[in-house]
Length: 422
Image (tube, rainbow, N blue to C red; front, side, top):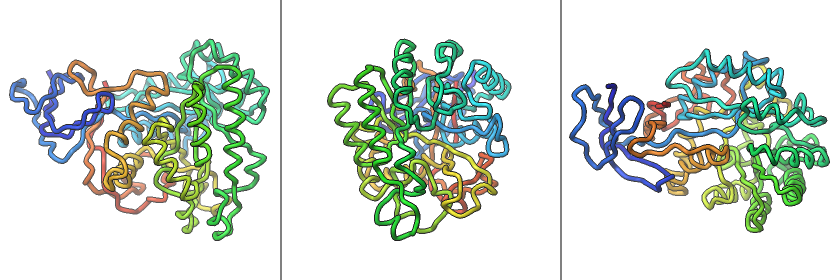
């Protein structure tokens, strides 16, 4: 029997609302016991002094991007899984915008085969979103029933759908399939050429502004369609205070919606763009300070259900251009937990359970999956995290093939020490 005893570790489990110091005995991939002190364990057990460390359920990412197939120089499935494991993620859902995209069962089968040959006990389980439209062009519906039968985790283009008539038909067709449907509300016409959120900072920095109504107008239309069709929808990439109000109102009225915000938007805002760092060019753009405050509060209160990573790798050459000319996106699988912990938990803004709930339990529920939990007899889908360990993200310490992050070369506190994935 392969067994480990984590001694005097801080146990976090948002599913049972547990935050306690305890011993945790793990054997053959299963949690055997959690108790204030465990003295009865197999002779071969590895004892680990875990004072000051945190153990919690594995993190779940609602949506991120893989370079493979088509853009392997940015990220391969293997490098993505290594990055996810290093960041504490045991489940990751991949958007379909590969090349070719996952808009048919053959494309899905290719990814499933390539994932299987790279299986590793420490790697996360990868799930794949199926495209809503052919080629992710927003023009023609995919064969959604065939994709659903092939095993996609749900349906999302990861791009805004501008054709509301098509979106309505999609919601009608998708309802009986019972799979998650994720939509990014964004009106590209209203967004125009904006590269940061419109406001005082966009004027000060001389960068083209993307108005908040590019999101909220599209969101209002989406909520009307949800009400008309009754189809449950997950709202991706919420980034404005007004969107929070619209979602809160929709939930109050009983509409079947859940929502997520990118991890960056709870800790950064437009004031961070004074550096003109191209890695801060993100879609949706970072909000104004009032947006960040509203998002932070909305996640705590459950109006926004979950935090998504939206890991978007780009090569050095692609990102090393002027801010407005760079492709939008930043990596985050290895950085989200330490930075969110340091910014929100250590400052007392959020409790540790609130952060873990937003990164683990709630994303799993949004994917219609059973959340991981720390209880005797349950599979050990857990991570061990040291909030105090320091490290510096660079091309040598990051497992991702890409390094497009504003924290490159800056010392961080907090690192995942081990990931268990049964």
